Length: 383
Image 1 (cartoon, rainbow, N blue to C red):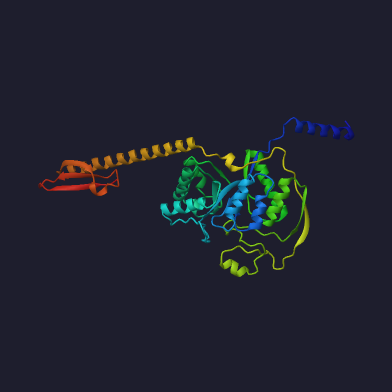
Image 2: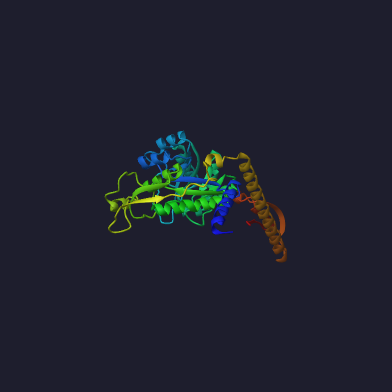
């Protein structure tokens, strides 16, 4: 076959494969926009995205309540972006969850943050590289999720996070972040990260992509989700985002005083170079794959009371088994103590009962023994 005839044959074969459905389904893509609530203009751009997305609102921010209402009316999903302690020690602001909190303080703070944002169906962590490693605190968070019938998304700001594991143990619907969209806000980088998330969705069937309300990210997503082929923007030099820094400040213009902003823990709008230059560029965007579906987490992760009940039963059984193990250890220690008394030439066991001084320890026991000289003595055994 000549090249002239071979090329059309190859094209026909490709088209046949496409229309016969032999290509891999692109799967489900879940887009989460974090840090919403500080900046009204950028928040409104997030709310007006032309596809169902999930908006995570910071508590007690100036525009969170209003934008959450708008997002819900537009058909988006509303989440709490819960501030959690980080390894850098950066202050969290309102609603911050810290390792030194008591259980009551922790749950009261989290419940208040959930109360101030309307239509919340789930939450994820803002920062949290320290707190998400604290499995006890994460268990408290998931107990709140159980009570309020919420799902959880682990933003995975650190690899050692046990948040998702605690959510599963509690029976809570949970997913974990796969890709951050805008570590680098240049349009080539945004396209590369979006395509990375699509590739994960194709391979695994689902991917979670987390972005932020930056002007570059919003312009990119508006063009991408509306099906525009290209986007022309005035773009500054790439700025990297550290997910352990606070959310963007409530500013619509660059902060004129970066030093003061840093002191107040506000991320200033700065350039990476000493002499920043802006430039016009046109970026051609790859079309959305035909099999790609954009999902909202409130429909993808509905609360399942039966799953929670099973998780609670499993946990209760584990506690029961541990208590039985501790009782066996206590009984073994009791036998050892009696054998030791006999070996020392006396001591008559008069009574064995739970120690009055150790009522909080169900496994503690007390031996009342009579020594050879007639003296009675109480021995407390704590396993």
